Image (cartoon, rainbow, N blue to C red; front, side):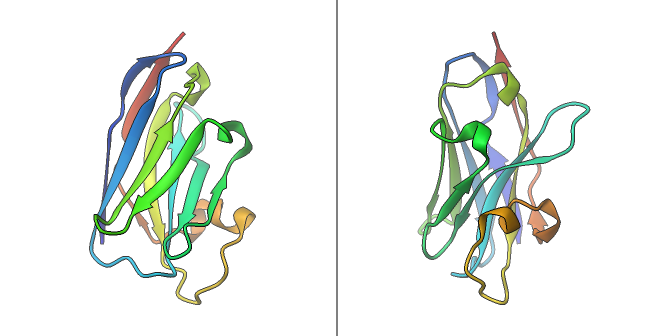
Length: 130
C-alpha cells in the first residue's frame, strides 16, 4: 500500500485548499484513513479521520467547522477540504491508513493516536500567510 498526498500550497489567511490522498492498493471496508500535520519544531498531530465503509468522521477541535474530510471509494482517494485557513494551520500534512483488522467500531480518541496507523504517505506542505 502506498499513499500519495497532494494539493498543498501557499495561501493567505482566510483562503481554502483541498488536499488529496491517493491510495494504491486495497482499502478494506474496516479501514480508517486520516490526516495528520506537523509544524516545524512540533510533534505530528491528528487532524481528521474517516471510516472507509460508514464514512464516520472525527476531527480535532481546532479544525471543526472549517475542515471536512471525505472519501471517494471509486478513486481510492481521501480528501481534506480546508476553509478559513489560519496561520496556525501551516504545516506539512500527512495522510495515513489504519487497517483496523479487528473491524472495531471507530472511536474518536483512538483514531487520533498516530501510533495505530500502518501506512503513511509523504507529506504535502501548506503555508498560510497573515
